Length: 417
Image 1 (cartoon, rainbow, N blue to C red):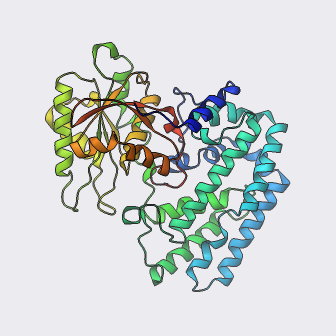
Image 2: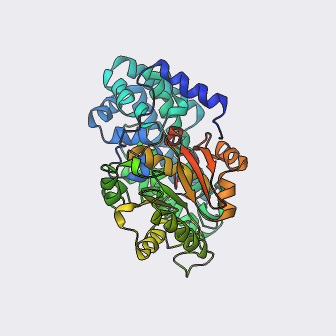
């Protein structure tokens, strides 16, 4: 069985030094009105849902000064940048000095006001979204959460404001010619929009956060919020069924089908997706598990109009699987996040995680998921292992154990953080 690296075990064990500093599987994130925002920058999104904390931060002179200076830079760019498109978003991210200055002030305020400490204890720690930046004390933990969110916003602005290359340019790029009149017009409009929306704001993060979210919207890539809250909509029937399932009646809690994108814009479901669904359906009929989870987003080809998970769900329904037995993860864009997002759903929905579930897919992908290459890729792209391997059952089927480390936000994949 593949085990997490020593440093990750030490990180997770070390977090037990402070009793409430560990992820809680039962914690349900507050997604608010903008799930894309909440899934990318949860701390800042929580502040938007808590007026008393927003007011506390607005009234702080040092933080208000940073907000004013940031808006001044935006105003200056609208006057000076002209036809230099790359000039407009240049000052809207946070500098290393600004990030550190804000972090220090947040930590000071948290030590003075229990309401900020409470957000760490009640949300930041149990969410698991910041566990790689945990601290023994809630005040520096909150400051670290801010630093993580700042890194996320800077990355979004770099990719979808300045047009830098994302990790996977063929499927995630801005999709505009940076030398075109269209890009210039759009980037000017984006800054003008920010100047109208956030004039007079004293919140240190509001201008940059709003600009980043609007940049994602401009690129038509606010995908992280698609179908949310899934527990109340697409996954409602299966979530309700899971609450009364007798898990001991089945060999495994869950069958996972990883996504398989199409190679054209005409097919709603790829041939690989069809075969994976049929393989999983066969296992389901044999009562290997009470639930099937289909995982895959709007991925291949670039800006495809069909969602892999939704199309696989439709196919399974045609085969005869009841909706109450089908869960979707419509966000994953890679095999790594097929596994990670499945782990997240299992923890949040109350699935047994102390026993293995199974992946059912084509032989080549099954072998890859079980390989050291895949685990190395998880470490390289996510910074942690999302699962450990169980037994290899066949060419198409393998056991896996989800890891709670999967709740950690990925700061450089805003379409599926």
